[in-house]
Length: 263
Length: 324
Image (cartoon, rainbow over all chains, first blue to last red; front, side, top):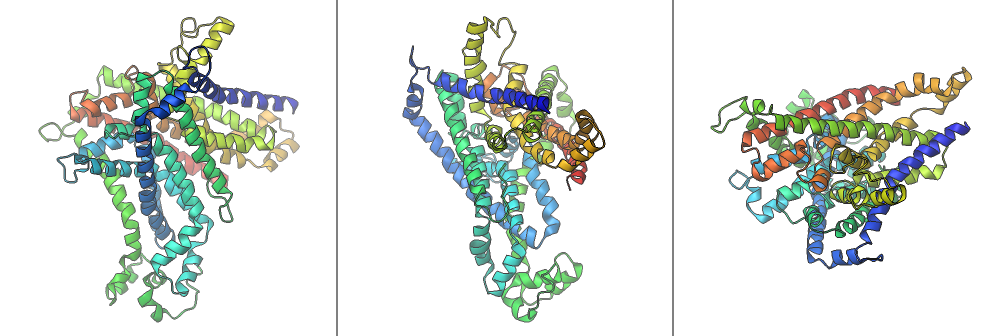
């Protein structure tokens, strides 16, 4: 039994080293900009770059729209399928699995072919259209995670009984969703939202192929032109991801009765 | 369902609450369709289907149609006629080697990620390590599995690049140059695999932890009572139960790495001829100088990842029998 514990610690230690060393090295590298001493110059340089603020806020806005649109698509569908049309569940499971099977690169290729400027629905013909297409692409990308978060949230509350009770009180369908179902699955929705945010904020492939000035393409541009800023940006990105995941963990503690999906 | 036994006067409700009346009759029952069709209030019917509408439209517009259009383009020549030429065009050295490198990198990172992830998860859950460690590690896994793409490439350049911290430390302390003496190159097969492991291992840990939790303590005790050694427990009980989940996660990891591009792009640029980079250049500027061939390339990718996921689905169905 002693040896078992030794092996456990050894495996854990090696694993921890693999995960912590790159973070430490990146942090150390990001401090090396000024010759001979450690400084936060690289971070200052990043924050002083107007393109950083522009691309970051662009990605944040697209991320927020992605969350809103995604919830509008997912929540009613999950609610009614759970409540009234359980036979549609396999279809939903299948659809929400697809974005994990079809690479994002392939999807965006299809979008560009299908929604080009000379097509029936010319999304890419205008800037606004491309932004809408980018948002929809991100909704598709985040669909598996949003669906599972919302579905888990609805499983922990008895939506059948809640809906019936509300209907007996005379509540309209709209009111049932907005003032009974939504507040009850708020934690699940927010978990899905933060996960979506973490996925969308640094996304490169789709944004770059649709030619939008998002954070991901900005990062790649910095990576080819600068030495120390990329390391600083990697640390900043890690902190953002950590923040989003940390929020999900904190929220998990407020989930009704059983825990919403946290990890 | 308790809904059926709920007593209330149905006629008063049918007007104001379309859902209740419909649910009691049962949706999808051919008999109920006849009743609804003859109903004087037609707005009863669409409510629930209408709510699913955005989802279905979304799936059609942004998943089905784009994929179908690529399949269509892959079998169409420039004049618009049906052809197998594009598929046949895939069998050139450049494209086949791109597929092959991608398959090898995805396979290696999935296999290593699964093995290492399994080992770490076992150590944490079954290795009698302190309780608090588990939630900390799982939280970190959630972060690391999402810390992919461009920033991850930056982190590994800062660590194992020519000027990276690990490279310099190894050179100054042990006088060992991993680039010159070790033959290592971050912008190569093993470099990319090592980088991918940073999100593959945590993904494995997150998906396999519930399965390891499913191994009940009682089984361990029963085996010990019957005189089984630790090795025998894992050989005959633990591993046979875990392996469907392991294999299933393996295909998930494979598809995950196979479709990845951002990390590879930021790390190697066009240096490494993997299939996603090839397709990216094709979409950007028709690098293959044949749109149909590009579509065929994409279709080939879908087929490979679907194959991995079909294995996953079959195996996951098997695994579920044990988790109850």
